[in-house]
Length: 113
Ligand SMILES: [Zn+2]
Image (cartoon, rainbow, N blue to C red):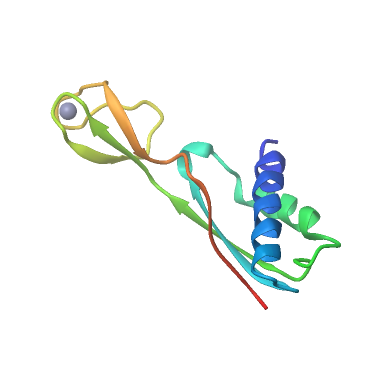
């Protein structure tokens, strides 16, 4: 269950930011997760709930936004979204691809006071 380690890493950053911003309470945290990271929302939520206990975020709401996987074909330059497991360019069937988006583990915003 790699959600736990992802949440723990992200949560440490959330608390760091909150400290720098001198927040005494975190109300909401908004994460952006690339689909390629294959995070299961229920497990992420569960890990978040256990990480936030006994912190200034213990009442915080969790918002998860998934970012689609986007690739650029190195052969023809076509950019496309991917939703299946094996990746190839829909235009030229090329398999030499650059990942443009999909591996993000971002904290988009932290709300609190
Ligand atoms: Zn192509």
